Amino acid sequence: MKSKAAVAFEVGAPLQIETIDVAPPQAGEVLIEVKAAGLCHSDMHAIDGHWNFNSGFPGIMGHEAAGVVLEVGPGVTRVRPGDHVVPFIPECGDCACCRSGRTNNCEASFTDSGPGSRLSYQGRRLHPFLGLGLFTQYAVVDDFRLVPVRRDAPFEQLFYFGCGATTGLSSVLFKAEVLPGSSVIVFGLGGIGLNVVQGARFAGASTIIAVDVNPAREELARRMGATHFVNSRLVEGDLVGHLNELTRGGADFTFEAIGNVTLMRQAFDAAHFAYGSCTIIGIAPDADLLQLPPTALITGRRLQGAAMGGARGMTHIPKLVDWMMDGKLDIASLVTAHLPLEQINEGYAMQKRGEGVRSYVTF
Ligand code: CU
Image 1 (tube, rainbow, N blue to C red):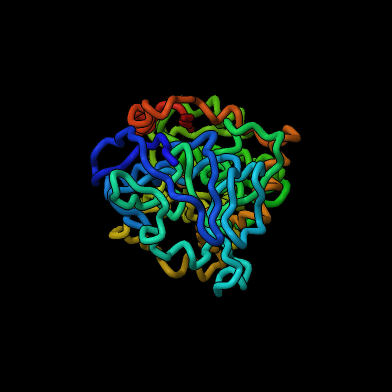
Image 2: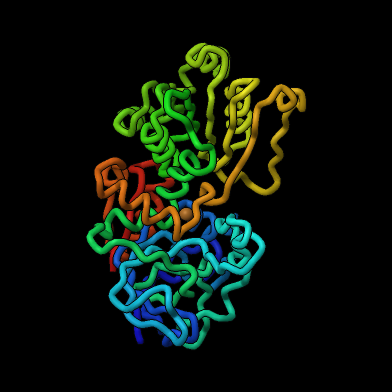
């Protein structure tokens, strides 16, 4: 079948809107119609060639979306036609990570998904980014990459659970396991950091300090549950010292949601020396090093990270969607723009300028 799609022909080039060919799903595969696809920073890193993980050119970017199952290939039991789905990190169920419960690192993520792609343009196979490739109205995805979800959840919010919302919320709730009454500091208030803030509120943290250089983020951070906003550019003197004053000597939980090693070090130092935990969510460039004095760990601080916030798609995404539908999580306030596919490059340009939090495209 034919499908409207945004094609990434080469590194650094703007995405081009084209009509591509989609071959029928084979064994274990599912044809879906993408109803909303979010613009996440990781796509941008792949487009710009800064991140080569399971991406290739020509390719179809897009990994944060929600859609409907149209057709299933032989042997598919996880979903049926008509199901609403959120594509996510695979859960093959069989690799060492899946068997140990860490499905967020399922080894199927590392398998090059290019050769098996059902998407092509003028006879050239298109590489689906991260094994998903969702900037196309119709996509073919392995069944173990799809999480079926309740049908009454709106697609224009549901898509966000395919990456950003789930990563931010899971880091707090399922990885760091923030406790009621605790103090939390969040460095970086983008599409993930703001979800860390609301995850901390949902977990019952009593002090939630949101740190960013953009004063325009304060209002949203407070709406998500921040009790303090610190504009790190306006702090006179030492930022960590200032944060330590607010937390009386160090926070119970800190998070870095940007991918900057200087901020990671500050987040680590701002965690309480004896019992604080620092969780790294942002992805820093491969060449960067994070330096720490080992004694800062000996005292008892913990430093950890987790791909996708440690989320297990089938276990956690339906739960998070329920909490949104119950009004306990505010996803709508973070979805700040809706664009037609034709304006996808403009959407990424907005993101680079720091405008809005999360935008999505429809076809
Ligand atoms: Cu993403």
